Image (cartoon, rainbow, N blue to C red; front, top):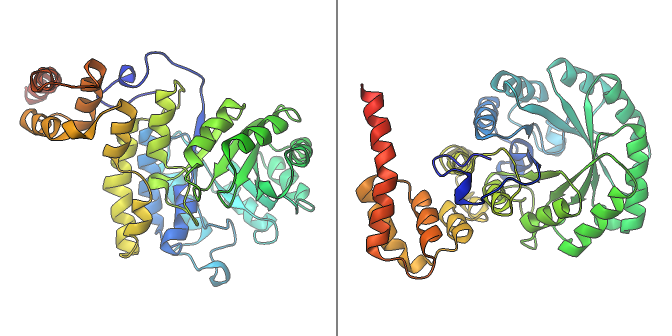
Length: 366
């Protein structure tokens, strides 16, 4: 995991298990702006997400292929335009789209394949899987990886869910998802669903959580502990209803716990604040409340570092005086003293951070 100027050592000393953070801002966050992301905006977000280290990126209308019409909330662009934008922006990251049988069609899947998608996320209510098998098989026949989302997973018991997961695995699904559509599941319930599923299939398991009970990020952690390897997230946690697991928080939290995500914390924070936030505000000026559901960069860093905010004025002045990143300064100071950092200590660390920057600036000037 890379964390910009700070290095891995600022959050954890050793690498841990690899996990996949699945970025779904360009689909799920569309609900917050009435599906008005332009194709150009999606292309830019995709490029920035790849630069931050995300390897799986989902784009398109909230309800997937075929949902761009007025029936589900007319989108600013067509399915094809969004996929073309993603394909043009991405060089290494895998991208794809959502698909609900009865809304999308096989012809649309075929078109999406021609536009380069790597995966298709097929979603059905957990009690309504009948008829989905043909779409799983069709996507697989085209060489597309299939992620199967059991929407409203909580509507059946963990045992029933596990049996359904085993069934779609036999159909050919590559990844099977627990989906907490209402943000209703508690961590111990997440563990039960994931563990049950792991007992029925050797396929990868993922978790898609909403944040209505403020548990989306921690439920992602519990899913990983129970054997999942995919966790969905969105920038600033923006998404349908209570939102989703906040990408910036999840990146930092997983790093602190020793997981390897390959995602750069600072780049993700900067993407959320400097790129995503202005896009959302331009499309829906009254959406500040949606954006503020997620924690600020500073709130996240303070929590990751174990930093008492009463000392913030001292560190802020030192960061401004020496031109260093406040986030890095907080992390480094807390490695030295989490209880009562002195101004002398803060000054010393700020100076040490400024020296490499000055040397690099000198090299660039030569």
